[in-house]
Length: 393
Image (cartoon, rainbow, N blue to C red; front, side):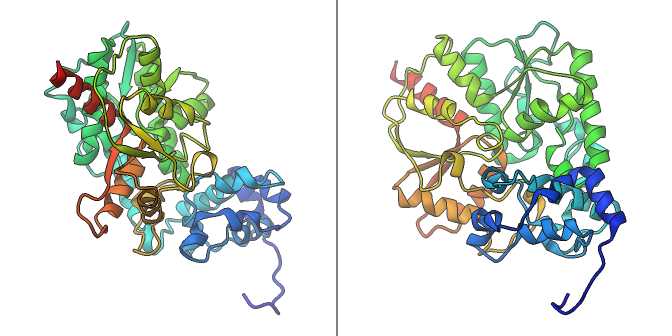
């Protein structure tokens, strides 16, 4: 579009964007602060401000990749002086693109993920029948009414070999603490958070209704999750369906069990550790202190903070459906984050999100020194400490 061209707004597209949830574009006065804080501009040029401006005139460029770059990390709306909901504006445009089946370049895998979610309840192309395979050797019971907790393992913890270790660690900790819990197994579907952020609203609604029915039919009273994306969705988005299920993230529950004396951390963890705040745990839901308190309860652990932490934590790049996108080397936020962990001399980069771990593990492979940095979920560190305590007895 040249500077000399005069292009009339398209009111029907403006209306469609507004009806899809993007009405806040009206508040934008193009100050550009969103572009300044956006993590994309650490690795390449990108303007969310431009996308909001295009929405104002009904001229979104749905055939281009820029509308798919936003990771929905929450950095720009947290800093916006006008209350523009950049995430909602971007998702509303993605809904239009998704309705036309327009998935350019690096996001073509979204077609496959969407089809797999509709067919098998997960985005990874895995069979629903194998969803509980990770628990086969742990004596984890199917959830039954009256149990204290439903442990809702996300898709990555159910199927991804690396993330299954986190599900196992979580189950072992719950058993150690004497928590009565169970899983839904094949009755469980993806929470739907990420596919909703790619604009596939009907797929999200279908998944949500399946889970809600399973929760109600099973008599679920409280849901434990390890994924911040599941946490955010159950807490903030499922109430759109007129239900409210108490949900707790594993980092919150660990601290709760420690403070109640149900989980005794008798072992030690003598390493220098830095903690990464996942976007959907921190900025979106304000959970910063509990994970640090859990780490602080481990004898011998030295906790150091990276340059960007808490409210200013640097996104791993996996949100907003980007976990399924092809991000070229040189544009990966996770590479920057791993470098920040090394800069503070950390031996272990610990977090509490499956997307973050997956991206950090990939970035770790590019490090010069083999084994220079470990990537751990918070449950894996607690599990290792507990095992160390047993060995010391």
